[in-house]
Length: 189
Ligand SMILES: [Zn+2]
Image: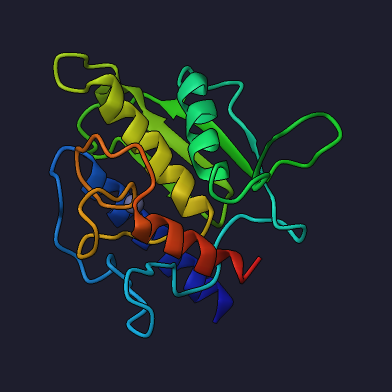
């Protein structure tokens, strides 16, 4: 049963990722998991929920990504709400998420998070097309994928300014929904 859930999780994260890419929002029952008992809270409903370790940290390694600066600025945005959640990986810390780049033209997604593998992939085939993707579009992709590692789900029916809203957006600050979702997700760390 756990394996089945893993497979579903991978499939779901790929759907999420596709929706961030070329197509804006791709309608899917897999996204938009609002906790109806807590309006504005969008957290991943199935195991694995997040990439936080037993200490409640997400240790990241983005040294190999050309978007490293955006990872660092995104980490600051999330940590400003819950200090110290993201921490840079180093030789003495086992990483929880590894962020790397791929170049996959035509595959329909700009960023993908795999909670089973502990990985974020950023797709330079789209993100490096400066005629189509602004700096803030790239930041939104990176910040959004970081949000998934914290256990946050897509938020397409709540605050439109949310980082966790899908689409080619420039939302790079936490909405009230993002903050409430982060707080709710953190109770599971
Ligand atoms: Zn997403």
